[in-house]
Length: 145
Image 1 (cartoon, helix red, strand yellow):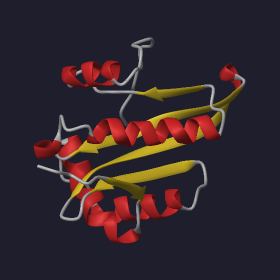
Image 2: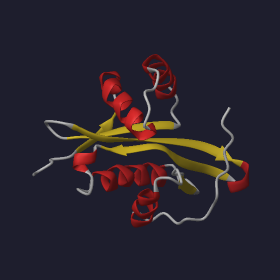
Image 3: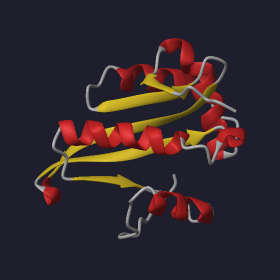
């Protein structure tokens, strides 16, 4: 299957697709209005980047990338917050293209590093991120309230 892949910034009309991806990513039904509100707010922030991968027929995946100036890095650091490729299109280079566009953004802005976190339950993601050039270098601790 020829994908004729395009990567572009998300638009408001992409919200239903983004919402469905997030529900699958979290394996739960999220509140659509809250997602809409957060996405609208974050889209106005020039340090937040949301990209979507699509072909002429389907939306195939998306990625979100947040940049902040961190003291302990003495500069700008980017973090991939959400990263999702539709299951039937995985393994076709879509994720790699999305991440490569994030790498381009990081080069243009001279970021110190790019970080990504994955749930320990998603063991396969570790291999995906390592294949994309990421090193497993930290532990992340979380308290849910």
